[in-house]
Length: 155
Image 1 (cartoon, rainbow, N blue to C red):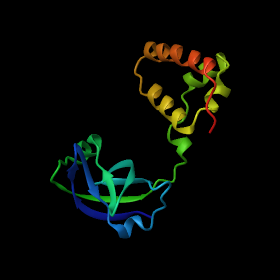
Image 2: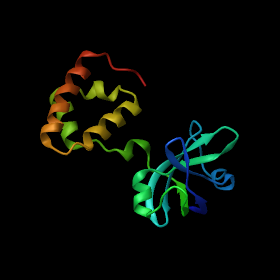
Image 3: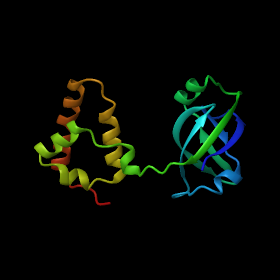
């Protein structure tokens, strides 16, 4: 169930953010202190993570795409609606077909599976954002030998 609040966007260092009311975060489940959420900023959807702050409310960092979508800037007030992100973490970044094909072809699927979940996600996310087939192939040619040579880390 989504909860709404209004907040003024301010900066911590170079990062725009808002404080999330404690009454809202108390109803959300934290994992290792962090709370995965989906929500909207003035009606524009986003997926983000609330960050714990010692002796202060949870903080929601408002990234550039969020600011642009809502037409907001630091110092502006915005309406937020947030709720728990129920997407399983491994489903947030599904493995692209070209990566799966390469892992099978080079017999590296087992080594890739033994990487930490975070490392797998980062590789998938990086490769998924490449725009050309040439860039994908170049990066796959770097990845496969690394998976074959290094003993894979255990989870």
